[in-house]
Structure formats: structure tokens, C-alpha cells
Length: 195
Length: 195
DNA sequence: GAGTATAGATACACTCGGTATAGTAAGAGT
DNA sequence: ACTCTTACTATACCGAGTGTATCTATACTC
Image 1: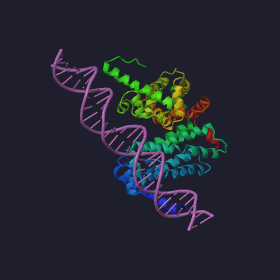
Image 2: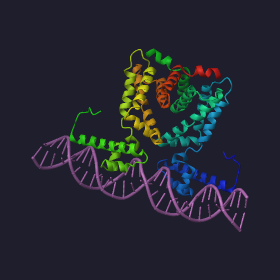
Image 3: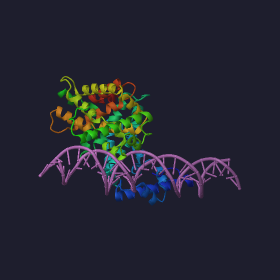
Image 4: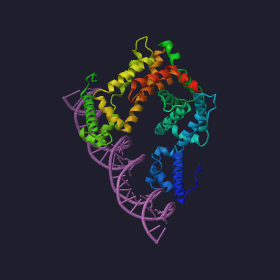
């Protein structure tokens, strides 16, 4: 979390205001919901100018998802650090399931609850998630010992990132199962019966 | 296009203002670009109130994509009306390629050019395109003689709709080829060599 | 055909996210 | 002590989109 070098006072102050903004925002969001809180209120509570809020976070939605980078790192690590006898799909499936259980614990679960009834947040979260595509393509390319990503890898990454988005319902495990089965074995078996 | 019953004067006037807004918008967009045109300017040129613009179109971006419904109809028809010996994937691939060539002709090509350098438009177009998912799921369910959509169908639809989004580059045909090959035959063949 | 209801449009004020600009003040490097 | 940079402020602003009350031409009804 805060394992960066404790550099100069200036940077310390900067991260201080950043966390102040973040804390003000999350407390207000959890209290009244995302849409009902204005950026100006957040700024007031954090005792900064609205402009400062946007200096630290590109959009209002970004105040909810401040741990995006770590998420990507975990995803990449899940692929790269899998055991040799594990396929990429198996590793991804396991990782997705682990992430889901992670999201069900405090304090993430409250943010997830906030998300459920805020369309703009869902949308933003999905867009952010899909931004990991390039990173996933990069690991896969590396793992497969290629110099350039192949078209197959690109499609695989695109498809694979869709799976957790569809498994956010009641039974994530079996949904995930189906998704990866289709991704690994293909549709032909289902479709061939009906041309 | 305008094959609806020529009903009362009221509805005729309504569609008249709608087309006036649409024409004003497209001409201004093509002339100066999407972002450089304000809704007020469009409203002025169409001689209506800004409020009226939003009464006809939910968002500014919707002014560019006014033929969304027809697009969905064509997609559904491509699946439903395929010849019996054609698989769904084959039908979709052919349809996508046809749509792409359609988009390369006037006046669509100019709208596409407009899109290229307007991120918000690309985003909106993709979101709108993916909204066809439910419709695609519905046809597939029907075509496969099921009462309820299966999880496999849901994933297939999700994946299949991603393919044209990835084939917007230089060589759509071969990209499409790869996408559907992966979707139909699965990743196992590629991945197995590298676990 | 007069009376009434209503849908489409208007006028206008407003909210809110986000930006632009100019300036201040504190910290960092020399 | 000397700048130079940088986080932040103050303030005004922009543009998309909404809320509300109102007007009016059209449609419906008796």
C-alpha cells in the first residue's frame, strides 16, 4: 500500500490531500450514494478546491476505483506465476474466482453494493477492467515466447476478459466454467447440431 | 426508411422536426467535428429549443447513430435467414463483412471518419453495438429451439459481438477469420503447446 | 361544430461535471 | 539567499442535460 519511499515533504503533503479527498469521497458515497454526492461537496469536506480533486482523479468515477493498478498487477501475476502444469485458462479461472471472493469481503463489498445501483459506476468499472487487455496480451505474448502478439492471443485476451463480467450473477463458478469451456473447446460442438 | 403509415399531421410534424434536427446536426458535425459543435448550435440551426433536441435524442452522441435499430434488425435477420447448411458463425462472419463494406460507402464512410477522431463517439458506438447482445441471444435461443437461453448461448453471443470490434483495422477479413476460428474451435489447440 | 384533453414544443432557470487562467506560497535544488 | 518548480487556490467559465411551468396546434369526444 504505502511502501513507496517516504520522500520529501512536498510529496507527503500531496499524498495526504489525495487520501483526504479519497476518504471524504468514500464516506460521502457510502452514506448517500454516488450520484447524490457532488464533487464540490467532496472538495469541501476534504477542504480543497474542486479543481484539486480533478488534479488527483481524472473523473468522479475514479474516486471509487483507486486500486485499479494493483488489480492489473494481480491479473498479470496470476498468468505469469502459474505452475507449469497449469494452462492459462485454468490460471485465469482460479484467479477470477479468487478475486470474486475478495470482492465479497469488507470493505470491497460495500463498494460493490454501491456499484450495483449506479449504472455509471458499473460502466466505468467494466471499461477500466477491459483496459487490462493490453497487459494481458503482453504477458501472453511473453509467456508464449513470441516477439509480437498474434491475432489469436489478441482475441483470446479479449474473450477471456469478458468472462468475469458475465459471471457476476448468483453462481459465478458454474458460469465461469461454461465460459472457459467455450473459450477453450469452441462452439462447434454446440452449434454443429443445429448448423 | 419512411414506409410507416402517413398518420396525422401531428406525427408528421414531429418527424419533420426530428429530421430537421438530424440534418442540422450531421451537417454541422461533418463541417466542424463532433466536439466543436454544441447542442445549442444544432438547435438554433434546426430552429428549435435545445430541450427539443433532447426530447428526440437521449444524448448528443445519439445524433450520430440514428439507425441503430435497423442495424440490430439486420443482425438478427442475418442469423435467422441464413441457409440451412450455414452455421451461425458463418452467417455472422458474412454479415459482418457485408456491414463493413456497407460502412465504407457514402454517406456512412463520412460518419465513420468523424468517429475515428472522436473518442466519445467510438465509445458510444461500441456500447450501442453491444446492446444487440440480448437480441442475438434471443434469436439463437429461438433457432436452437430452446425455451430459455443457455449459458453457452450467452457466452457465444458475447464473444461473437466482440469480433467485429476487433476487425476494424487494416485487414478485417483475416482478423474475422481468426476470431471465428477461435470461437468455433477453441483455444486449446494454441494453448496446449504451452500449457 | 364547440369543448376539452393532450402531445409537442417553448422559455428559462438551474445543476453538475469538468476546464481555463492567473496567481500564491511553500518546498526543492543550486 | 537565489531561483524554479509544483501543489493548490480563487474565480470565472463551458457545455450537456434536467425540471417546471406554459403555450398551442392537433386530436378526440359529445
